[in-house]
Length: 242
Image (tube, rainbow, N blue to C red; front, side):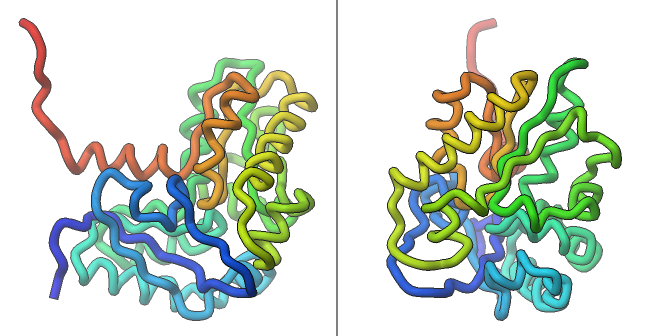
């Protein structure tokens, strides 16, 4: 039986480890982040360690099954709380009859195309060492694009890594924000020609405003992508003067 009025379906990772780590407003896992009601579904067996590991592809059938269930429940869009779910993009897209945006990395080719010659797109990811060329190509980025796309990882950021990669301890919002801002600023210090930033991880949008304030350039994330689609679903008449 379908549920009505929740057009966005979000696949979620299993919560692991100890400590209190809520999904705060802005996080993909917080329902108040979105302008329309959403439906969540946890994928059994999909956790941070597995999706970042070399055998993450083994979860494909479980991801497809969960996405299919969400579509049966009435959603009109499938997304996921983890950007590394890009590895399941094609399998889910072929299995369901609705648009699929499993990773904010899908924004990367669009943003790169908007930048003028001489400018680069900076991408901040949870784990740079887990990001493969296959994932980038699945997202639509062509090969040999190092001069246009620069990636920084947070796997060595002390608080972010402990909180969201190692799944340990309580969430310290200010400390995680500092880690994310520092990574973005360091990336721009290394590559001053970066003209836009894309935040890959679904836990990063709460810090996008702080990153923009620190860098002074446009910052995009999961919410940029999903809200773009929502605005296509929920069109309202324009009002104004003629």
